[in-house]
Image (tube, rainbow, N blue to C red; front, side, top):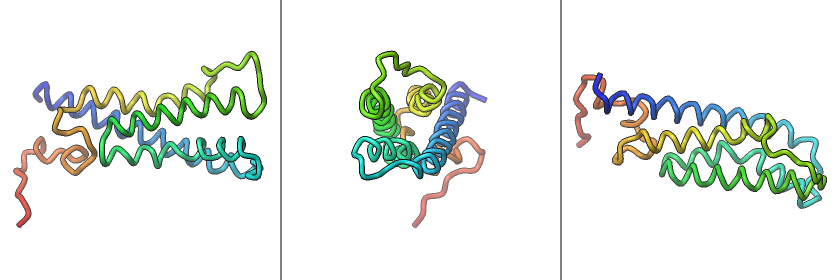
Length: 142
């Protein structure tokens, strides 16, 4: 296994891990947002940030960088909403367990960007299944 193949396998693992964490957070957020009052703008924004990780992860089909930036913006907005809008708490800790799990999805994607080759920085069949590394040549479609 060459160095490039190892880097690509690490990038694939990180993208799959980020997608799994994002899917888990979105599923948990959908369940947790059922008890919120959607008439209040702060709780509606909280529900949107709870459910947003997996749809934002799907931006990685277009670009891993855009997906990582969108997940970071969602993470920062969740911190702001939890700290100031819901119940103002002067001793709010953004590094609690929920915050760290929420932060792990964009970190996985950012590290995957560094490991992926420049021409493979989006989710497509070459990135996920690695046709160039399986030993079978890729035949272009006619």
